[in-house]
Structures are given as structure tokens and as C-alpha cells.
Image 1: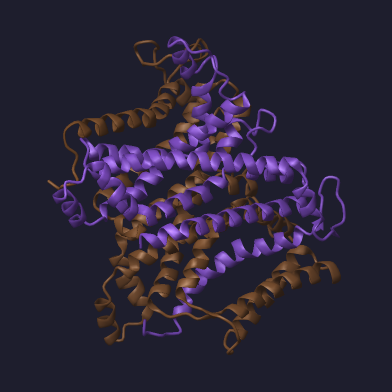
Image 2: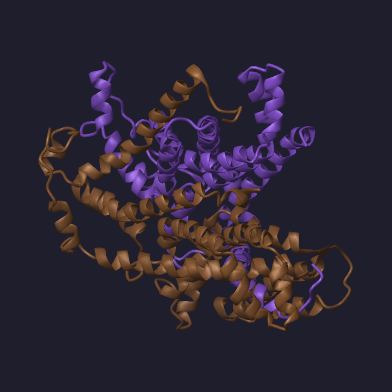
Length: 291
Length: 342
């Protein structure tokens, strides 16, 4: 990078300005609002309240409930996505029969609109008109309340998340697997290492950095979940499946409690940041060990 | 054959596993496709599975949908199409430009000027609204402009503190993806409605939604395009520079055509994100520019058990992206995306 030309600013600034104006700026606006008591219904003049909104939220059990629900959905579904996704990526990398066909079809769920997926899931999980309960009854299981019982509803949401986002894990891990050097495996073959030893001794450690990145991206994205919950359960039964984003939507659009919602979204940001920092700190020794 | 290929039993085990996953993947798509062809009794009297065997397929749901007797379907489809295609084009173009600048030219931003921007924008906004009593939108725009001008001006001076380079700027772009979109969506909604009060309508407009989508896609575009562009050979550009070709012509005439595969892949990924996006559309549109995902989410409460109609509507949102998935799969097979994740 030795070139320097004032024209470089013309290349960078349009993108920079758009992000600054539409992402960073609302953030500042919202941070200012979060310290206000601001309601539209009933309309009240804005009043500076400092950190009252934040303390209100931190003592609100409903907030903590949504944090737990969101974290549970995100962590469980990402763990399962990673295990299944790694297995599938390995199979594809080792050129399983029909690899080209599988590679194309496995990608599809990722590109289907989450709201459409949720609507289809509702049909499949319907207790009387859906196929899943019919098959379950046929096999001798009881008729299960997939969307109306708190635990089953959480499980259903996690299943839908797995259906939709495992392809993303496969896509990235497959790219990583294809980039591994062949000579290490040839050496292991000469040493008569079993496939199991080869996996834990070579593949897994060498894939650790990309695995860490994939898990990180997926957890952060899963924390934002709203579309599927919005359509499938609407946060119910009760508030059993209410996630952070849905909670913020309810507060902002049903109650028009603007200052409170802004504070809530900042606490949400805080939760994600803390989670990311903890994750990176936990992972650091392992990443350095295998560097 | 590579040493890493599967042999014997393992080969069949892996095949069986892939088949099982394939069934799991395809069943919901199959289900929505056949449900859109069912008549009401075939849905309500318990599940039916195979067309022509246990139910007689009909195109009634599709005819109802396409003839528009069930409300504003075409309008949602077109606003979805227009917004997602145009915002993907703009995001890819702006992102490619930014990525090019970040790959080929050095940038230096002083941390302190960034902090000053933040402080002045926030302070100016609070001051303008609460002390001088200017309307919130006006106050925020003024504070924003002053803060930006001031920090750009101050960046010329040797301020103390850390100096950020190109990698930090890329990180800044990418870190936007970390923020929960609800933070931005809600704030944008407030800001847009304030602007509406000033006579400049932004909620439920093409401009409002497209701008949000461009900024929402830019982080990923910058990240992907940076890898594609840094993989390009420098020699061609250097040859052009010797001939005194202006920089913008090098970019549009040489760099963009050379990175076409990367541009296509990035465009496709961005398109899928914006086509399916729900949260921003829910907050920022309500009638005229409402997109398909919002319409489809609403079907649930409006239609109840009319699954045939719901399925047809859901398929309209699904099919374009399944075509895109086919395209992406072909791009992947040609090894095009392998470079992007490293």
C-alpha cells in the first residue's frame, strides 16, 4: 500500500456516510432517548430521568426471563447446528455418494424467508391437522402440544432454528475443510492412525479457528431472533418463548414506551457484548495452543 | 483418490446420514408445495400426503392469489422486489468501492476524533432539544453535521492517542453486524417519524427502507469484497497507472470487471438477506411499501386455518430464493466462495 491519492476518499466515504447516518447516528439518538421518560400513549412531555429506565429494567423479572429464553434458544440451537453441521460438512468433504446433489439441496433452508418457515412449521406441528402428530399417534406416541406447552414450544423453535441455519454452518465448515492440506493426512495414514484419531488429532484442531468464528457468528445472529417466534408462538404460551427482540417490539409498538424501549435495546446490546467478550476470553487459550 | 475419502461401511453410513438430513430438509418445502394445491376439505379433515393418491390437486389457491381477490398481494411483491434488488445493487457497489479503497490505499483515523464525534453528536442533540427547544429531528441533523465536520477537521492535526488503520476501519464496518438490529430499527423509526413531522416523509417510503437495507448489508459486503479484491493481481492496475488512467476509470474499467464472480456472489447473498428481512420492514413500513415477509407474517392471524392460501403466499416468498440457492450452489461448486471465509 504505497499509493496515495485524494480520490480514495471518494471511494470510501459513500459507504462510510451511509453506515454512519443510518446505523451509528440512530444509535446515538437512541442512547439519548434511553435516559428520557418518553411516552406517546398517553402523550407526555419528555423528561430527563437519568438511568431510571435502566434500573427499572434490571429489576424487572420479565427482562431477565427474556434474556434466559433468548440465551437458551441461541446456545442450544447453535450447539446442535454445529455438531450436525460438522458431520454433514465432513461427509461432503469426503465426497459422499451424490455429493453435488446434496451440496445444492442442503443450502436451501438458509435462503427461505424465516416467516415462511415459521408458517410451514405451524402447519406441520398443528395438533389435529398436522402430519407430525398423526405420525406420532400412528407410532404409538401421545398427541403432543408442540406450540402450546412451554417446553415443547421452546423445543419446536429450536428445531426450526436448526432446520434453517445448519446449512450456514455446513457452508463455512465445508470451505474450511477443503482448505486443509493433504500431506498431514498422508503422514497420518503412514502412521496407521485410525479415522477417529485423525479426526481428533488433525481435523478438529485445525478447524478450531474457523469453528470458533462460525459459532460466534451464529450465536450473535441467533440472539436477534424474532421472525420465527413472532409467527410461531407470538411469545406464548404466556411469555414462555418471548425473546429480547420480541419484548422490545411489544414495549415499543404496543405500549409506545419509547425511552424504556431504547434503554431495553441498549441493555440487549450490553448482553451481546458481554457474551462475546466472555466467549472470546474462554476461547483464547485454545486458539493460541493450536496456532 | 485422496486418502481422506471414505471407505467401506463408513461410506454407506455417511450416505445414510446425508439422506436422512435431506429428508428433514426437504419435507417442509414439499409440505408447503402440496398444501398450496389442496382443497379446504383435504386440509381440515386431517393431513393428506400425496397428490393424486390421497387428494386431488387443484390450482384454486393460486388462482385466488394471482387474481388479487385476497388483497394487496402484487403491491407487496413489487415493493419487496424493488427494494431488495435496488438495495442489493447499491450496497454491492458502495461496498465494493469502500473495500477497494481499504485494500489499495492507506487510511489513518485518530481515535480521539472518533470520540469527539460521538461526544459532540450526543451532546449537541441533547443541548438542541432540551435547552434550545429545537425539534428532535432538526436538533439531531444539526448535531450530526457539526460533529462530523468537526471530527474530520480535527483528524488533520496530530492529536494524541491511538491512530487507527485500515484493518480497524474494516473491523468497524463488520462490527455493525454485532448490534442487535432492534436498536437501530427502533431508533430509525423514531427518527423517521420526527422527520415526517417536519414534512419530509421517510416512514413507509422507498427511500427510507432502501437506505436502512443498504446500511444493514454494507458490513457483510465490505467484508466479502475486501477478500475478493485483495486476491486480484496488482500488475494490471499498475500498468494502467503508468499510462495515467484516472483512478475512477481503473476502478470501473478494470477492478470491477475482474472481480465479477465476487460481485455476483456478494450480490446474491445480500439479495437473500434483504428479500427475507422482517424486522426493519415491520418497523419502517405499513402499507404502500410493505414487503412480502410482513404480509406473510400477518396471514397467520388474518386467515387462521386457510392453509392452502397461506401456503401459496409463502411459496411466492420462497421460490425466488430457491432459484437463488441453485445459483449459489453452482457458484460454490466452482470453488468461488472458498476464498471468502479465510
